[in-house]
Structures are given as C-alpha cells and as structure tokens.
Amino acid sequence: MHSLTLDQHNLPGFAADLAGGGWTVACLCAGWCGTCTSYRATFEALAARHPALRFVWIDIEDQADLVGELDIDNFPTLLIQHDDVVAFLGTVLPDGALAERLLAAQLSTPADDLARLAASTDERRGWQRSGNLKTLLG
Image 1 (cartoon, helix red, strand yellow):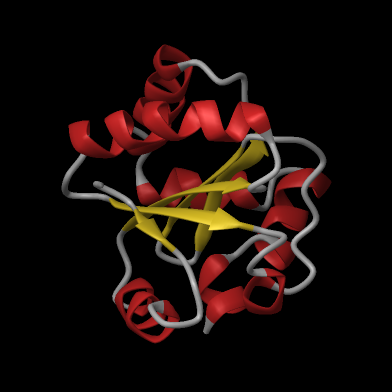
Image 2: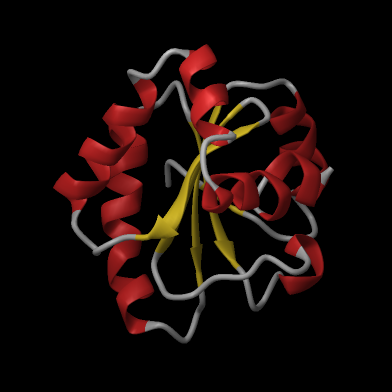
C-alpha cells in the first residue's frame, strides 16, 4: 500500500510527519460504503504515482475520536492540504482521472495563491477551520 490507513496506533507518527509540512492527500470514507471500498484501489494508484506526497486513508466513522467533528456530506471525499492550507475539501466522483486532474491543479498552484484562495470564499474559509488535518490531528 502506498497510503497510510490512519488509526490510533499510527496517529502520533502521522501527526509528527504532518507537522513537517508538505502536501497531504486524504481520502475521507466509511468502511460500510461500497463506493469507498471500490475507490480504495484508485486512491492507492494515485498515491503510487505521487510517492513524494503524503497519502492517508481515514475512516471518519471508525476513527471519529481522532478526527473529531469533521463533517462530510458524501463519499468519497478528498482533502488536499499543503502545509497549513486546505486547498480542496469535497466529494469527488470515484474516477482516477478526475482525482489526478484535481491533484495536478492543486500542485501547480503557487503557495501564495493557495493561501489567497483559502480565504476567498466562505466555503474555503470553512475548510480552513474544520478540515485542517494539522489542527484536527495535532
């Protein structure tokens, strides 16, 4: 596997790694969700194509005590974060090409533009408050 499946045992190491900055791509799913189960292979393939990035699979129901009040509308949900900036947080179609394009768009955006965009709408400001993994897991 190319991604980490977050649980209480690996949380301290993951949180320490996250504190070091860089890119994190999280798939927020639920074990009972058939779409999520099917999407796992797609997410792993995405992680394999981007070994320099941090990929994490988070079952938001089984690990609710770790992620707190993270509110997800539907599955699968991707969270893409650079350092302290949540660049994307939303439900995606379970399509590998779509995930690749979404990630490429975020990776190609300069850090100062990511920060500006993070404050540009109520929705994106909400992502910073409720979806920042460094805050949730730190």
